[in-house]
Length: 345
Picture 1 (tube, rainbow, N blue to C red):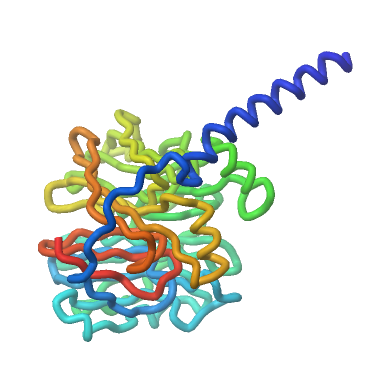
Picture 2: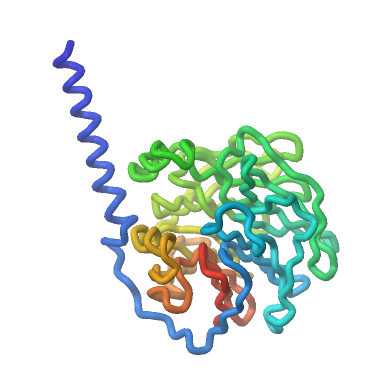
């Protein structure tokens, strides 16, 4: 019996080491061939607040919403919130989330518009547990809190994609949480998290098998859902039933970096920024003076082929988390930096 146990333990350890050898080199950037540094001389740095993690553009009003959360702060930080500005006039920047809970720590955001009515969905991580907040958007971009959604199925929310005025998909990032088990989950690249859909009353699992779920987006016609796997360096493409919100995986888009938030352009192509070197990211997390590369690509929504659109070693912006395409430019946000970069497209 002891021999059988030892053999089983040995096989488990061998499998774990093999998995580490597969996951860690890619996440560390050892297999990443850096493209040419982008010319950022025409880019403008728009100072906002620490942690410009997600950006959403409202093509109807021309306003840009930015989610900020100072992840280096111990507890709530004064700059945490949702900011809005006109990209043609950055001086219009202002905080519009005064009507939010006291412990507001925004993460992923999603804008939903139906005629003249618009709502902003926001993932938040207060000390009491993660949640998704829904806001009405006023004509000038000011937010009015409508409701806060919590559900056992929404256990580690990262990003949100609205499907109606009171419904949404959300990605969960980690099954084991912020502890040694969560570290092991990431190191082994375990496919144990999911996409959840909230139908205005309850949240249910819509798809599983994600490896650290990150950005999520719904196509303009509502037929497809795209979910980023940060550790697995892929985007899962799902066919969506708009009546039941059921998801069926139909494709996979891959690129050699840690994929973060997903934004769609007018053609339906995916713009995705992310992390190329996890260890540089961790060093930057501990010390703002340490730079971490930023990389962003555009995926053809039909073929999944990707094209680099932005790369910097971190001098212009560190560890980008989002790239939002506008008509004549794109905006790049970051996990820790306090600005977004506005560059000609």
